[in-house]
Length: 257
Image 1: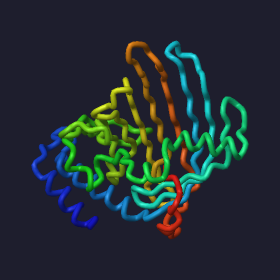
Image 2: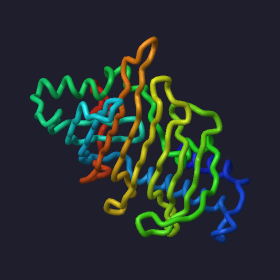
Image 3: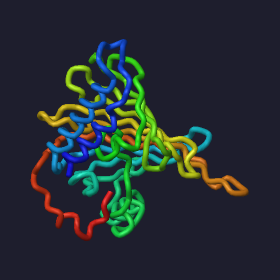
């Protein structure tokens, strides 16, 4: 099935224009980026890793009203199964008890297991399963942390809450994605802005996310403004253990992330 998706994706990219400034066709850059994404995705069937998280909440005057620090072990399989076990949670400097952690994690996950199991998440636009939803354009070349890269802009053909619009930095040496930075192409009514940044790195030969940061403004207003918050979520990922053979049964009866 994955091979069919890859071939379909490469066919969709067949008519793209050349990048005359770099001496390589834009189509070739995209083809090889999609191919590399397919290889990276196929190489990691599942993974266990550590995530250090920081959540901050500011009011409309820029004053911090809440800070949450977490450490958790993440169990991930494929693109649709992810579960976190929390080692600790600090809220405004106070370490939560076991019972308090249960309540806080329930709020973080935002639902029960039946609700969350069908929840869709943003997918890389270069994933073979997603590429048909996007238009791409060449945005030039630049250094990413001292390494030569191409910049590619992406935008959904039809805006949707699960499709991003933004820019990717692609390695000129091996076509790995250094960074994705994007917003949501069709924002829910309560979101006034949204930006996500994912930075990738090499972990023992596997190309995986190293950092994720989300910034958003949530404003709920009817006749009066009930909430106006600036939220930042940041995760740093370490200690990857890929392909340990996590069984599907592990996720049964758990509230997924």
